[in-house]
Structures are given as structure tokens and as C-alpha cells.
Image (cartoon, rainbow, N blue to C red; front, side, top):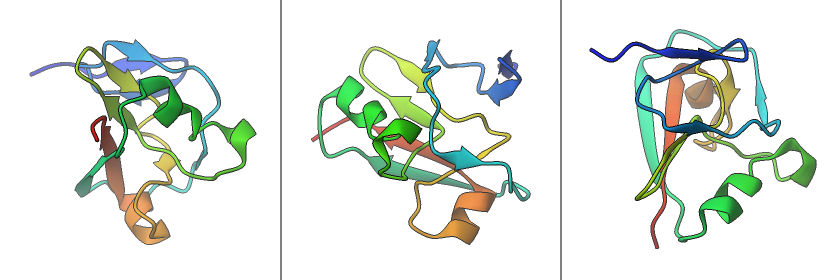
Length: 102
């Protein structure tokens, strides 16, 4: 079993290869995690996809992880709610994983 990584007070899967330290859209109203939601970016720009999750953009979306052919990014700590499912109660109870592809 891979141990989780604690980075800057947040918890991430131990399989991540990097962390995006930009402030991401998220909050601390987490409930018990019992779901994993897998999405696809519908694009191939890693930087472009992650940039849409930054608080500074005002878009209001995010995910816990971004999986690319070369990296697994930690974006929002599993201790926090990421805005990935389009349904706030689902966001509160799930981990959102984005897959970079078109």
C-alpha cells in the first residue's frame, strides 16, 4: 500500500508526482468520502486544464487530481472539497480525478 503524502497541511495520494501549489477552488465542508468521480478534460493542455481551477480565474471548478501521460498532479487536498461533479453534495463526499485527453 502506498502511504499518503502530507504537503503544506494537505493530504494527497502517495502516487502523485507533483503538486500544483496555486490556490484552487475548494472549501473545507468535507463529508465522509465514499465515492471517486473520474472525468476527462476534453483537451490535451495540462497547464490549461489546471489553470481553469485557480481561484484567480473566477471559473469556480477544480479537482483533487490531474492525471497526464507523464505526471499525476495533486491539485486540491483530499481534506478539502473540490468542485468537479456539478453537484455540491457529491463534491463533498467524493474525490475528483481528471484525466487529460481529447
